[in-house]
Image (cartoon, rainbow, N blue to C red):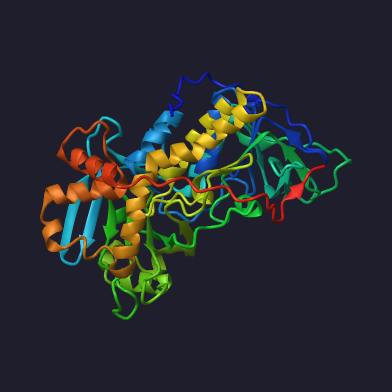
Length: 489
């Protein structure tokens, strides 16, 4: 499927960049061509690319920006590539570049620079999710998307045939029905109405012929349609915390520790720890782990404390330098929810279980899936309602499995057979850690950084290996069980 190519953006007039004046949301809600639920990386990417294609799109977000989000805050070159395609200014203050990764396993410490490929940039980035998502949402609004923040989508709206034709959502405001957000001279402002016809907190219906679910791991809309999680797929857990650490904050490498153990010198953790520089005197420190096949889930807080006690005192990774609590979140891996499209609803990002089973990366995948979903929806809407439009929409899961299916299938197998039993430690043995060729090959495998067509021996080997992996088939759509979704008469 052809990718949407970014074009130079005209400067938006501050008062009209959202595309619509701020009228009150009535009991009947708002209509659009596409509704995107969730303004994280997946949702904002989808809304941005739809708006750039001239599609009238509403972006619903339950929180208000800026807001916290559990994340490692590290972006690989795959994610940077997507930000560049969106035209995000990554040279602005707050973006911290990384040269590569530093892997720690026992006594071994190695540096692996990001590869210089034609397809991807040779650097990564760090940016706190506290304002990263805000930047992307603003970018979508500047392109013409209508953002409704503080609106929680509660259930899909369906017609008599069971097809999704919108969502019902409720505002978090006690005294304002809600309205689209548009950027003003001093940042986003909420344009409100005082329509007495809509009492506070009364749900409103937002209607569109296509709905994109980017509502995160909770996958509220997908579950309402009976799109259950595949129990055969792994779900990892991540926990992170910020620390004041001026010494580590300016590092040029994303540091990964693969030799961590369960508390009390138990088995190796089926995951890794990270220390990512934020450039502002802080570091993002965290753990990501699968459930161990024999020992179950690790106590990540205790594991984190045990690990940080090993780090040098001068790094400052101690309780007195901590900023905020330890926060955790689920990581749905390897297409663990399917099908990715059913009855007018497309799943992107965590709602579709798109986190990489190789390394737990999710932002790059969310940005890419949002772009593919946007292109699919735009192409579908070029056709009148009917079989041809439906055929185009059904091409979305086919395209996503074409892009990642083999890589994820191999990654799911590795997670089941290796990582969930003994973590990364057996893979990063002394032979691998002492071989630059093997290290670079493994790094590209874990981060899915290869060129097509192949540019070097590593590309050729990895691309050949993926070609021999049987291609998975997109899952089937379930029957017309609507769950808690509300049918519209």
